[in-house]
Image 1 (spheres, rainbow, N blue to C red):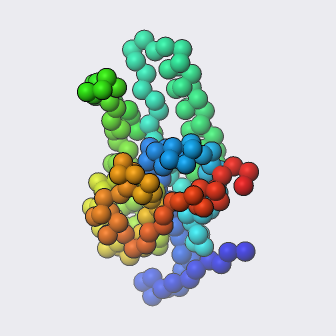
Image 2 (tube, helix red, strand yellow):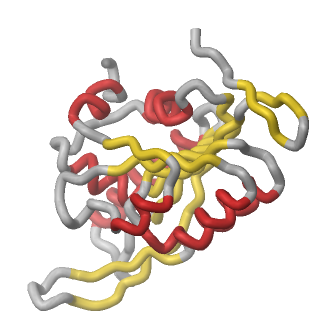
Image 3 (tube, rainbow, N blue to C red):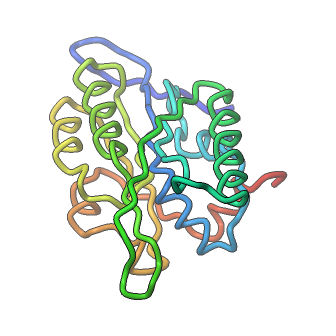
Length: 201
């Protein structure tokens, strides 16, 4: 049985409370480096919460882009993503925040370029709101995006302890040094971690 941690905050002894903030696009890229591992998201949340009382898990992602006249493959891919988001939303204390995927043209190799919209803003807003309202004492982020630095600084100034879950498998998913430097704690997502949260493990 895990032990809930106590601490002093504002002269009162309180349970340590944590919220989790998962960048779904970043997690997808990490899982690709581990053979597109199929994970149990409840296990992931429990691992990230550690011994703290879990307030809520927030998962940020976009539904796939659909062209004006989507093909049957696009429709199926979109429908599968919708079903996946719905399943996540039904997990205990789990909330999916949906951004928008914008088409930005074709790159030099002929591949389509997409950009996630609203995801960064939603994550930063949730983190700042939870910390300034003293809803949490700890926050765990699974991301590699350094755009969250101002939000992290605000959360820390309100007394929140920030843990970063990240991968360093490649330059594409390795977080910027500024992000690694600013957080209070770091947890590497390696093969052992992935194995511990796989479905059926």
